[in-house]
Length: 534
Image (cartoon, rainbow, N blue to C red):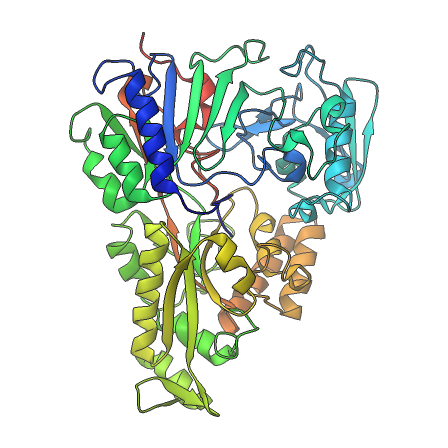
């Protein structure tokens, strides 16, 4: 529900530190870029990870730079081989996946990659002692078997249809990570992988610095030095980009629009990536007001999603009625919610939420009021939160908008609403299970609303355990229809991600992106393939 991850404040100090370093290396317009050389790149991102260990969740959706998975995605999000030599052979009615491994691959420390590393990675993630909140994503795995050094067989409990998508998960070296505490060892901040880049340094709150892996099996990258500058504040990120201290950055719509049509100086190109990324308000069951079914339904009907797309996103997105975008084949037609203020008021009137003297509705001595938190420095979340509160006020519901860091917000999630985010293009199971499954309530950022609906739980399990597309489609139709009856969340918008990058890197591409963006997504999803001007 959050981009992995934001930590603390200090964005201004971090950006200032970066500015000094970048300016010392090069001046804007000298042809070398922010990295100080033609074969270097510095990009500005909004978030940094909690960890750099894939055993704890880093890079689980691919594009981790330091690591590779058995498979990876191409520009069209189609699976292709990475550490595997070919796509897997599927047998036993969808319950076995056999991977032949690529020959001659080595970790960046020179040690060979083998099937044992694959077994180690998956078994460690599934170990109860491992603090990986995403381990339920591998629930279908019964056993991982190495057959010699070059073959791995996954044995599944049931024919989990999207399993191949799960194998983009990065592989960790057993000879290093297996000798440390998986949760606290040095590998979490100083990883070694088979990927196109090696980590030079992680200056927390400031930047991640990488260098090209000269022995990379896919060929040494042309961009030899790659830096991800962590600049949490949108406005500061835009300022640093304008000053020539960044070669690229992710920006919100209001700051990115000036770069359309070649930008203000002709040196930068803008990119819009289609996404499954949504913004949503959690309505926790632990709050007497936000957890009330009629309040939830009224807000779901009374919120003006189109106005948010038009004014906040400047048209770069679409209205959201659930985790599945309306243009996805998995979307259930007829679950769109028409903005109807009068109908929303009737829901509240009928339920006994009567207007009070202050204009705030009341029922049984309880005011229709609750707090809504958003992440400090995130302008998109702030704007969504304020628009939501404004719409709620028209219904007689008082939503008190507050900003904070995740350290402040997370302990409050069981009772306070949060302007959150999520979204994964790979498969509906990837989003809906962790978002809605009642057994995951309170498990980190899973099921933040503590949503509890037996019909949804049953449908989620059926969709996960069925290998038949029609059965899965019917199950997800049930989930989406149940979200109309008792929302649990107010979905607001699906957001296009907007990026600006120096033109010296050529014509770049973007993928269809998940919620987690900037770090693994964006035009630098394949920076190892960039061909910078010489």
